[in-house]
Image (cartoon, rainbow, N blue to C red):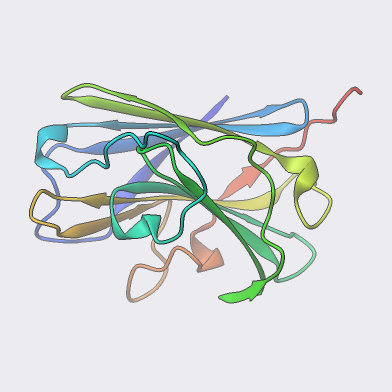
Amino acid sequence: MVSHLLVPWPDPMLPQGCAITVQIKPESGSLFLHYELTGDLDALRLPERAAQPKPQDDLWRHTCFEAFLGDPAGPRYVEFNFSPSGCWAGYAFSRLRTRATPGPAAMTHGPICKHNNHTLTLEVRLRIGSLPWPMTDGAPLGLAAVLEARDGHLTYWALRHPGAKPDFHDRGGWIARAVAKDDPE
């Protein structure tokens, strides 16, 4: 398992003492992601657990965790959003911010989230065999998060912020690499 630390976009209103790490583990036919947020979670607005978690748009408008996986052979990529509510979203793009259809069907259920006052963990498995292209070792992987403070202010966290403003779609921030693990079946 490889661990990565997300860094916040410089913001004077950052939640104090928060840190986000993401562990990545290739598994047979899937990619396992384990996000861990530590700090004063009482200072954050966390979505309530949905009675029936389902795919949902606009999760990034509140506290959520994200993953971007790029096609190493071209501009295509997929974006996944995971909410502490258990809801999720997946989108395919043919190039920067140009949606392709259909979106990826890489999830069979929503993320699993647990938290107390100081730690939140969110785990998800992405079925890499259902991506719009064959998964190969070294595929660019972007990991990110949006944290919403109690007052509604959003802060942006990523592996790297290469531009003049936060932009999780910028491949310059996708510095992790995905590893494919063959499915023995």
